[in-house]
Amino acid sequence: MRPFAFQRAEGLDHALQIAQPDGATAIAGGTNLLDLMKLQVETPETLVDINPAGMAAIEDDGEGVRLGALATNTATAVNPRIKRDYPVLSRAILAGATQQLRNKATNGGNLCQRTRCYYFTNIDQPCNKREPGSGCGALKGIARLHAVLGTSDQCIATYPGDMAVALSALDATVHIAGPAGERTVPVRDFHRLPGDTPWRDNVLEAGELITAITLPRPVKGKQIYRKVRERSSYAFALVSVAAIVAMDGDRIARADLAFGGLAHKPWYDPRIAEVLMGQVPDAALFDAAADVLLADARGFGENDFKIPLARRTLAAVLAEATGVDL
Ligand code: SF4
Image (cartoon, rainbow, N blue to C red; front, side):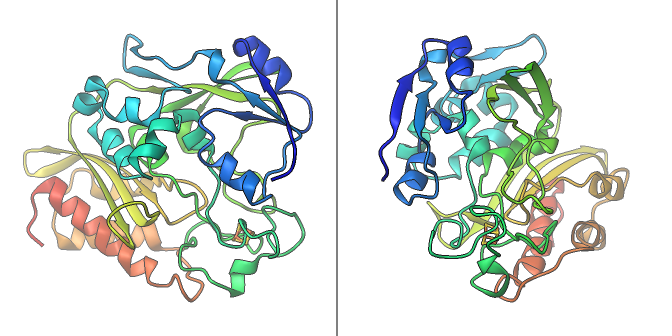
């Protein structure tokens, strides 16, 4: 690890002030950042500890719930209101990492975690995300964990998290503060596709910090988070599905679905709900929804299996949510 300076912020304003200069990186739980620093993928000149900035409350905001950016993943997952009204979020968080990591990891940091592409974390390998213009080792290399939707010829990495997939299904909002003031971004627009600028994971500008995530008023429906992975814990998703599905009689009245493990961002496609809503659920309908999801899917050899796996996982989740026996 390279030497770096360390500064502790005294509050949010101070954090925003000292996190401005080039070379300064904010640290909260550090569960991803410190690994990347040890690997020399991240080499900040100054680490700014933003933990004294507060922002750790989980509170009712009059409609839904406001999650402080510095609330830990554990505190969020076990919060009684989250477990009762947003169980898909609690389950998604608990499906990620380990108990020890969740105890340290924060909600803001979770959204900002970086891809686990093997070439990104190995500084001897080409990677356009780590070193723009150096190439993409994964395109013709080991790509088992990589994306099948929204890829570019610059990068085929996946966003690795679980929590943001549930937040996307829930249509949460990210609150941001920075040099130009405060702004909000729908979580569905927070992460980016790689395009020609794969080094940008999300829409945060230099010097901006996430301050909170707000969840809208809870909605009726069954909430499911299903994560398919190589082993039953401490593994990233090959495919995951977060679903909020409500029935009106024998027809689907609501179908908010988001997918992990498939793209550079949690994948949300409103056309899937359009296919499902108002219909009587059956295997053919679930197949039609998967056709929409996967119409533009493209594998890169080792990850070809993700395309049929996503189809089967979506069908399984919809069957569970609607009571259909496949
Ligand atoms: Fe880098 Fe993206 Fe290619 Fe991985 S997939 S090597 S992160 S450019």
